[in-house]
Length: 281
Length: 336
Image (cartoon, rainbow over all chains, first blue to last red):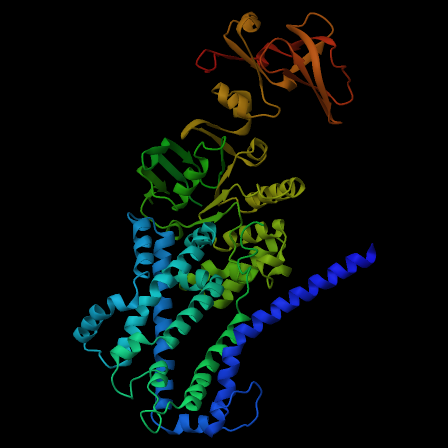
């Protein structure tokens, strides 16, 4: 009797870990292969092997010396960071109004905001292009910041509104009684309680802006203003028929590392239960 | 420090009128309790006084000055919420100091002194460095009270501050609030509760509210001895006043009479009413006997603890004194 139970238990555990391994391998393999390729050079690139056989930093060296890649990297950092700061600022203030101020048409407004995010990028591309030309920010980082903020805001506002709605009303009222203005309530009472939501939405907005391709391709023309995804796509080899896989992979790895680092830093800060103790319970 | 005047105060939420014209004067330094069943508008009335809701019509005056349009902090009120409403990310000290740091013109030293004085009054000095989540419910409520004291308000508002505490802590905190009122006898306090025991024990005067209107205002003993309606008579006092109507009340020449359980005695004979005992509760100091004399609800009689009556026993009961019988007309108003 005991033996059969043990066998069943062992099988279950084994199957479970087999499944986990399969999922991890399938999910990680493309990235692993990219990293592997980025360290290869010459004809090695076209030989298929799953373990590192040779090691060379030549690709990385080339990425940083050839063309405007470092400049592109800086552009990406600037565009993504400013987008996140701008989007979070607008979203926090907007969600305070949408969750705490009673006004007519609030529900419809919230649904409209969500609806905006459902448009595919390509549908608004032409219109957005006109707006950007009109504002005179074509081929500058501001064109990208402008368009990314537009596309990030619906999601950011929606998430923060939901989160803010769940903050106890009494805490806000206590702050009002203490003489706090809406600005003080947002910055000194709500923002500290909303860190988890701010970090999560900020991180997602950053990743979206960092990886965006279509707008970046359309709204910039010169090598000096491009962001990294476009720069990688436009990397070219010695001739028309050569695709520099090694360099592309090296560039991709360089681009992904900051994201992984950011997630690792902030996931520790994403702690739940920050509001514990403020009200009963 | 302020006397309050409410003049025909009304409040509507959309089409629903919640406060239907309340006029009331609250003296400087008085402890006023708003009491009533749930939905009577007592919390809304407190929030109107606080400035957390806008007054639809009517005038609210603090010391003769109309404050309808002033924000809570400009009115100089402080409020203790039912759910404590502490700022979870701030320490107890920061919680208590927050209001003062927002006001201009207080030095750090002055703020520290005020916070520490309030903390000493409530014996929470050792918790000043802790976060709210590291405190128990009773301690959190003390911090909330301390936060209100630190602001040195003209009017101190309590919105059912004891309802989240367990029974023992509720009594202890109630006594503490009573002591607080003694030590801050200049500060006007308004306290909302649905618990008539809290109202009786804490209040200088009680305001009984019903359906958005004032039913009666008076000292606890006035309300107990001379209720202005059957509603007040039934609401104040525990156990609830017994109401006897119809034929059984004919002797007293009124449609309905009300007698409190503590004003009834069990007699071997010559009682006014007779019936059988259906239940008895012995609490040690008192015992309550439930007698079915033909009314909808059994009549409750209070006797000294230790007296025993068997269920089914036939007893006769009578009021101790005819003066202790409250007579009411068909509209529920007293006949005096």
